[in-house]
Each structure stands twice: as structure tokens, then as C-alpha cells.
Image (cartoon, rainbow, N blue to C red):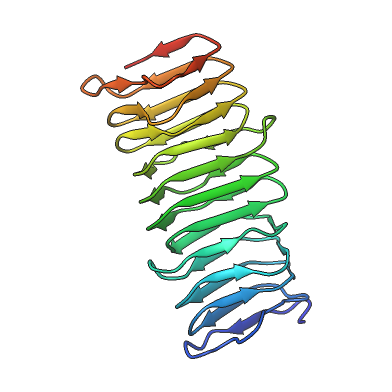
Length: 231
């Protein structure tokens, strides 16, 4: 506990055998030689965690500022407790990444070599480009919007399990897995737009793939509103 002060444990050879819990601090920097587990923590500033193993949580994280996580491209990041990320969450390196937020969540510039799963009780937004090599699963709740309109690259299928209005941008092709959208869907891509699962969209659907690219949505889809093809 260091209320009003920073905590910096930045030595590369730190080994934390049990959970690291920050009771009170401003900015926090943690470096672990191996995996690191974060216990219940309250941080009034920013959090930066670098590890050479998995990054997990065993208690809720309450972070007012930004969160920057680097686990290495071969290691998972699993922060699935009742967390509250006040600022952007950026994944510098990580394989499979799971994030949970009790409110809205903003995802900063991130490079993920595996799959991404984000669950929130508020909007899901981006403030930087997301590069996800695997699948992406998003759940914001049927009353909340998903707005991922940066120069993102979703290599695997993207599935929206719950959301109101959804806006997605992909710098290449984009494939949709099974999705349930209670509002409108707007998709812009610089490549083909396809589906590998059924889309259920209550509102309108607007699609832009570019004049040289195909749009193939041939699953058992249900489009409740008009479907507009802009390009």
C-alpha cells in the first residue's frame, strides 16, 4: 500500500510466487520473470505489467488510468474478475486474451497472437488499432454499443454475442461468426465480408467492402431491418 505514491517493481528478475495485490497507489509498474497473478487492487493512476508468463487475476482490479499488459506472444492474459478499467487497456503482447469489465471498456492499440474475448457491462470501444491473429468474441449487453472503428485487423472470425449498435472496421477482409445484435450493424472492410456463423440483426445492416471485394453472407441469417451495400 502506497496511497498517493507510485509503486515501481521493474527489475526483470522479480519472481512473485503468490498474488500481487495493490491496496492503494498512484502509478504502478510490475515486471515478473515468469507468470504473475494480480490480487484485488485499487490503483488511482496507470498500471503497467510485463511478464514472461501468463498474467491473471484472483481479485477485482479497479484502475482509474490506463492499463498496459505484455505477457509475450506465447502467453495468455486472463483478467476475468469483476474488474473496472477506467482508462484504455492495451495489450503490447499476449496470446489468448480475456478481459472483463463491470462497466464500459476501451481497448487501446493491441497485438494479440491468439484469440480475444471481451465482456463488458457497457460500451466496447477502441482508441488504437487492434491486431488479432485468432478469433474475437465481444459481449457488451443488449443495451450497449460496440464501436471498433480504428484500423483494426481481425484475422479470425469476429462474433458479437450481445450488443445494441455495432460498428466494425477492418483493414483487410472480415469474417463473422454467430452474432446477436439488437440494434444496427455497420461494417467497413478493405477486403471480403463473409460469415461463418448466423447473424441475427434486429436493426439495419450497412456493408462496405470496396468495389473490388465480395460480400458473401450465406449462413442462416436474420436481418430485421434493411440491408444496405454501400460498396
